[in-house]
Image 1 (cartoon, rainbow, N blue to C red):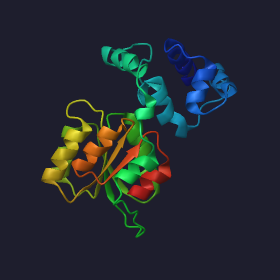
Image 2: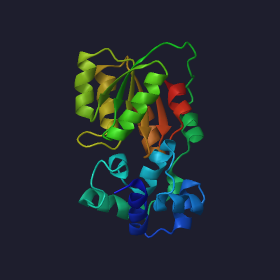
Image 3: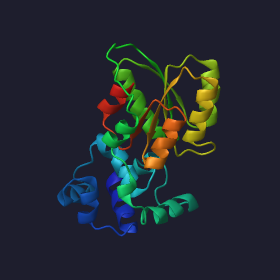
Image 4: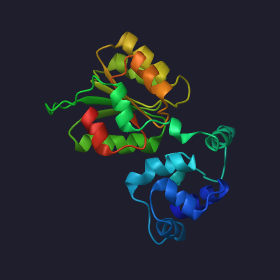
Length: 222
């Protein structure tokens, strides 16, 4: 099944018209129609927003998993997504104003970065982006593995998702700051409600970047 059919099936399941779906993505309904007909494909930079809007993993969106099977977790998330007030989500400027001590570095130092995210695609995308910017990258698919890697490797910066199996990102952040306070931590999550942002700040996160994100935002914060 190609990405156009996956988008169409998920959009239909969520009872969204092409016009409604296009408005959420800030594209034209004609663009959505072309994707679903297989005439063209979404730009790779749109994947994080598509994942968020369709309530689907990047792996399923790209056909790496069976997109037709909806787990109980996904069903619960979809039900919740229909009643979430999106106005509760902060934009990047609002988040940065909470982390008002943030000052981007311009020294060009090569960093050793640990990416912690349960999405294979998200780790791959971040890995490619950071390596192209001259940084050295290692990956972990969950918080427990990340904590073990921090014990074994010299890490400068950790990019940390919130919603992960096992211990979540905020719990992982708390453990990192207790055992490795020298490591800088950037939270990277679509769960950018003010309570999560302020909780991350209280736990000594160094920055918080909202998904979907612009590549320059990640590079700037690192």
